[in-house]
Length: 115
Length: 112
Image (cartoon, rainbow over all chains, first blue to last red; front, side):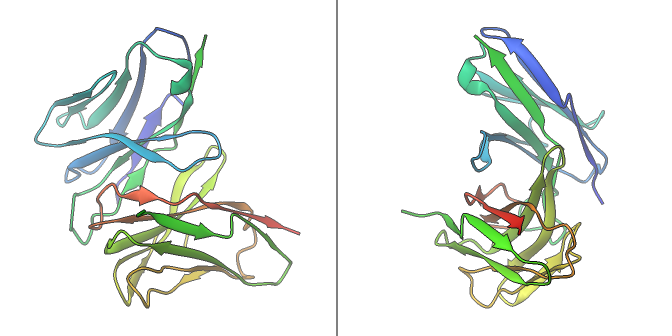
């Protein structure tokens, strides 16, 4: 099956700095890569996703990049704010509707933004 | 208001007891999932269901059982065979298997 590795496990940044979280995947057939944010004691929520026919996607201060050749994808958060502090999870799947299409999650990154 | 409802929020289990966690969704999603979350372990898949009356084992299915008799409901039973059940359990659903979907608020299970 798929194996998703996520680094770093913890990340501390100063408010206003950028944060980058990286994930690698093992199955070249994976083609859908969502990112989730989980605040303490709350449910994970989808913040951005990317499909393999796209190299980069941006939504305000958040962007995701995908390198299919190297089989890695990254989450970039610019101008970080204290409310960005949370655990972030990456995931990979073979896409919608596939019988093999379940999500495989990374272990998560605890991001702390210091004021 | 559409969403996923998990109950109870907190649950306590005695030794040798089976307990059932409820998950209901009104999003008309075909796929439903159960994840276990432990500190530093991320989200580990217990069981998933692509359609009514069908479900598949995930990565850590031992000691757990599920049913999918209705599209809206996917209850998880933690059996006495699960020796370390203390964890945060999250239910999720998506339109299709492998789509991003939505999560419930979770059930925190502890041992008495």
